[in-house]
Image (cartoon, rainbow, N blue to C red; front, side, top):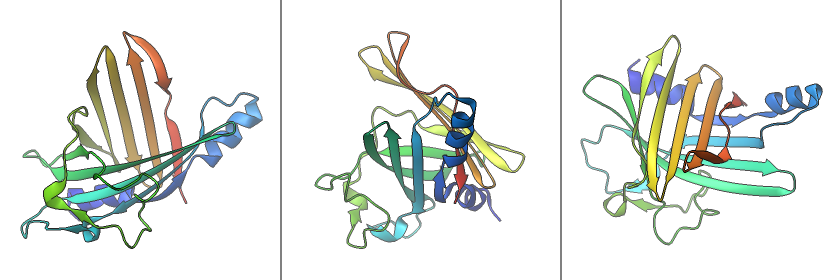
Length: 185
């Protein structure tokens, strides 16, 4: 199996951090939000893909609960291989005219035009290194105005570790240095 296929097999599926939350509750201190990811290959939702296209677009649906607050954060990522056979994550802006509530894997009416896709100007593409039975990567993006975003991710069979940290002028404003630990469901 090629590198990109092994990667998407690890990354795609439904994930939640229920076990992490249960462990934290048992210790008396919950430090992470209750979270769920749904990652699916979305090439079949994209029209006008070039015939020789080598990569996988993935819709990542992220759901977070902190107290009574719920947040939905969908993303469109492209995963390709670079010249060193390493997986590269490139982030795309959500297509115009599609709400974040509509931008879901199970939306059978969702159609995305490849020719209208726009790469995120803020996000620095992340390169994953293959480690044992999984992959890990880190991206540091300068969002301007003193805001820095650091994403660290590790995939392995049945698990996904995600650390996302926003800093403004060197101070953490949101996120978790210790990763959210997702189990495949």
